[in-house]
Length: 432
Image 1: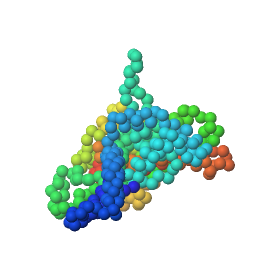
Image 2 (image 1 turned 180 degrees about the horizontal axis):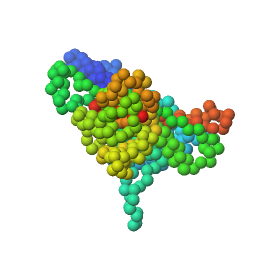
Image 3 (image 1 turned 30 degrees about the horizontal axis):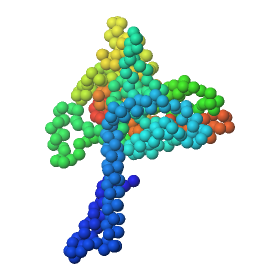
């Protein structure tokens, strides 16, 4: 498709030809010849045709520009809401299985999603695509007669990954394209002068890049279930995809947080040769580290494994005081704490450690006796956490691989990633 600029260039060339034709007749003080009359008619018709094409192209470009900027009119929002209500995921899957293509609303929404992926620089792999606008729509309050409550989200909204990082306050960015570059200014106020001195005029600000990672969740469903299922099928499938893809997003975030952190925070302890579990002292060390980097605020959140938080729940923060490290309201020292099964020892690089690597005032000649069980205990400034999504949902329907067992394999792809804008906003210490 030619752009409006290209069409205008063609029109300018035709107008030049027409002007030359008219100038020749004027200079010779005569009327057009029969051939010149025919040429004039052709040029006039071509120019008028280009005028119409240019107007249409400019309208299309304006619509695409609004779409790229994330702008939507009220009518467009109403259309998207109506589409979300009428879209049938089960019908889309059966359409592809039986006919090899989509029809109606499902086909229209696929084209919308493909436009999103194209704008994001992503090439989807599946046969069914769903635009992000259909899957991510906040539930609003509803009042019916004397009942006041919250309206439930639809089935498609359930496809949004259920990420603990986002639940804890991570910023969600949709409609991004290419590499997302987050500008990173120094978080330590004492580094301001040094930063200015180190950077020459016109030099780039240090930044964090976030590139898309494909998160693939797989579900195998019997063909009989696909043929007989009703709307509840959509709900079950969406719930499974939501939980699993959310877990993949969290796992990617933990790995990035470990890499982003400016080194393991040392713990204040007198223990020798063994690293203890979460205790109030280790939480205090993390709070101090985040505070020293000017990254501590009300959004700061602890993350650890479920096993470690179970230990913290039963462990007294104050000796004989009866107050657990993890309190009944799910906080440690006033900051929220979340557990996650993806926080494991595999996140920490497998390197030989001595007590000086982990403890303050330890004996460097003594090796750590429980090194293989060490895992990170995070404190993150959630204001600096960004969860990015490139396009919407991308579903692969594979009715061949497991055909001999009467099953259809479905793979839901999301193209996303999560990281912190400032290295100082993610700190962790090692617990056992």
